[in-house]
Length: 455
Ligand code: UD1
Ligand code: CA
Image (cartoon, rainbow, N blue to C red):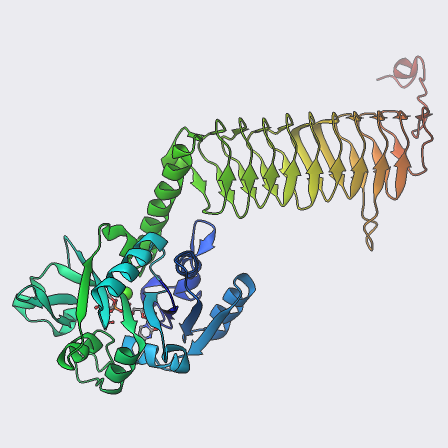
């Protein structure tokens, strides 16, 4: 839809969340609720977005500004109702098509917004409201029709028994022609049971002023689910999880237990990759084809090539190339880059390091701030000692080097190509290529000692 401007209402306190965090910043999987609403608006072609903030406005503003460009903010100091909230958008709503969304309905889709735009435009409506038929309409504004056409919206608290029996309810999503909206907002009063300026009353005003009010009945009630409590939040997470997992399975990803697999909306996964239960895949993670992920792995903002196996491990901001295996119980911390055919085994931690092709770090090892070449073998229990209490220093390990078990490599230090370190060595000096470094005291055997001390 052309000239589409979106006002997202997000000033409310969300009392029922019982939380210090503003409601719209609570996360559904890896993304804030309002983030989904912003992205759906953008996908539907919104030209501009204005977020109406109020309760803990600074926190909401700062969080959203860091994540999304080109969002403007309007502040509603006192929460005097949804109509009052829209008024705060000021010049933003002066012209164009104004779509109103709520920041606490993360399941809304761009498709639905698009369909609403089409209906609104082709019918020449002054305003089009999205309704749904609710099994239990309690709490919602009821859509009251007269001869099938729109008459008014009555809020739960203002509804009489007959009105309360109506199952068609207001989802809180509308598109207005700017002129009609502004004219109606000027006439809005707070003469109702809650003493609030209801946005819903603008529709009746527009109708009385001769405007055309349309209704689009929603196909999928779930899309408009408003999150008001922690229970609702868990329901929204479950619905989003199912939606994302269904899409990935359609694209050829195997998810053995979708109810126990949590994958973010921006995660990309290639076909024939198998995701076992208990995985959380987050951020802009990309996983190639034919990988085996899980069970029980958490992968955030990482890039995994094809044919990689990751079991019971945690990866953050890392890269892993093809045919490499990670875990069980490995921890790849930010800025780790792992080559092809690498083995990162159990109880291995890698941080801010490059590990080149064919290298094996099989067990109980810490590699931090290091550059490791190709086909290096780490014995069990190696530690790169990268921190002297003040600064972090790097270790460099050349191609084909062999690090003996239980070596400490005190950075900055370089182990050159094909060099060996003897097991149990604490290496403080560079080791030239093809040589063996032994840095431990020589063994002494005291023969007959046991008998002499009468033990
Ligand atoms: C509103 C509708 C109701 C509809 C329901 C759908 C009105 C009067 N009623 O009711 O018809 O069925 O949504 O979910 O509009 N907000 C502000 N400032 C305010 C008040 C609210 O920004 O002063 C924001 C809230 O943060 C929230 C949204 O507006 O994101 C909706 O407000 P809420 O109080 O939840 O409205 P409902 O009573 O649910
Ligand atoms: Ca609500």
